[in-house]
Image (cartoon, rainbow, N blue to C red; front, side):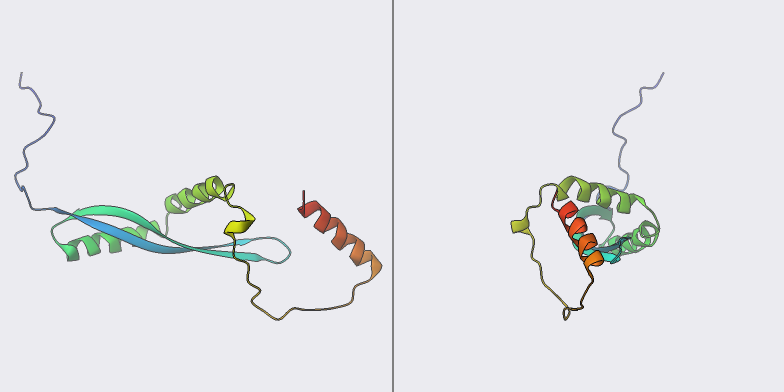
Length: 124
């Protein structure tokens, strides 16, 4: 019986070269609260491909991006990463900027009580 080699011979040795790939991405999500809170994150994925040349690597990425954007696997990976990492974020890590003109309106006592209850609940 012929023994199978765990490392098959490479007939096209040197045909494919490794290429580093940096894939910047933006992910946006909306929290369905009363304000429709919108979050946009920008980051990048560091990866690599084996290809004949740079153009071949770019074509691989083009095909992958086409299918990955329709798949939930990257999205689920990013959500898991956020769940794991957001617990480590402190107020000192955050840059808060007010981006629009404030809105000021008078409220009645009933609405003030509701607002106070809501704000007290957030501080817990």
